[in-house]
Amino acid sequence: MDDLKFGTRDKRGNWAPNEPLEIAPFWLGKWRKMARFLLDYIWPWNAFHMATTLLYWFFVIPDVEVMKTMSWGWGLYLLAVNAAGIFLFFGAVEFFFYVKRKQETRFKYNAKFPSENPSDVFWFKSQNLDNFLRSFLIGIPLWTLMEVVALWAFANGYHVFGWLEWQTSWVWLVVLTLLVPAIHEVHFFCIHRLIHTPLLYKWIHSVHHNSINPSPWSSLSMHPIEHIAYFAEMLWHFVIPSNPIVMLFNSHSLGYGALNGHIGFDKLEITENTPVDSHAFAHYLHHKYFEVNYGADGLVPLDKWFGYWHDGSKEADERMKERFRKKKERVKAKQQTTT
Ligand SMILES: [Zn+2]
Ligand SMILES: [Zn+2]
Image 1: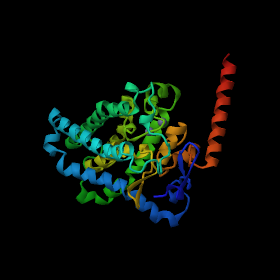
Image 2: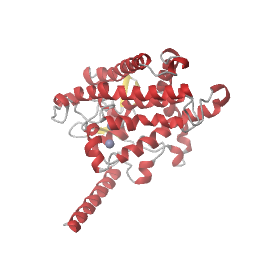
Image 3: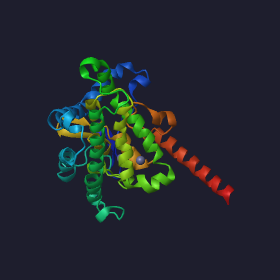
Image 4: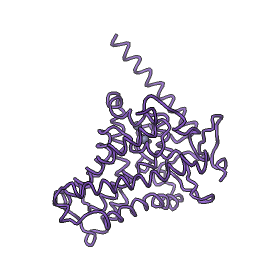
């Protein structure tokens, strides 16, 4: 597929899309774009997260009676399934697009592949190995632990509103399922902006940002405290009327969905003529410029409202540089008054 029909490539070989990012069309009154937006909203990524959620619910998650008691047995089983699932899903993207390089650098934002850049900031000087080990040794166990606690709490009725049944509350539960990406954007924006404050950034979030050129294994490569804050999003389902399937869908959007921002390609050519949008650009720009796009795609456009939104355009670039310049001046003035 010719990626230059959709974007441009600079002298270094880095590709950028022609179309700037747009927040959700209903915020802009662009109602004609709603049909396309809704299709994108569901297909393929959220449909995939719902499919894995249902597979888990019917074939992996134990009976309620078993979950009433916390035990190593079902906890470790869930850990093994989560690790295998992430290994297969992230690993497939890594294998075809980063190891085999099936579409080379077509639609790739950064022309370089992480394996070409050894760096001291990573364990064993390798971004891939560092990111892989942090995900599997720390990230996935913490994610599973929080899932186990959440399922155990649901099974025992430790919930502000109890366990809502689909038969009686299906309208609300469908609405809540559709709102999960919005819950995600709000929660992620808040914790993410918080860990970008200087001290928390230095101690916690810099681990994730070591990957300036992210790839699939970067997705869950974080400091353990960031893992906990990130996956704590599923705990919202204890203070809003919910059901464990919706909680699990939220959990899968976090675990499996972390991949999207770190794919590194704007489109994945599944076959020559069937590209899939990765929705990676907003978060790619965050890894590139750090202090922009703390949230996601602009479903709840907190970045826009707070002035952090970068849509990939030249104008947004200018606005960002101006903001950084003003920030530098403020820091300088503060330093001068204290000395
Ligand atoms: Zn990231
Ligand atoms: Zn960040």
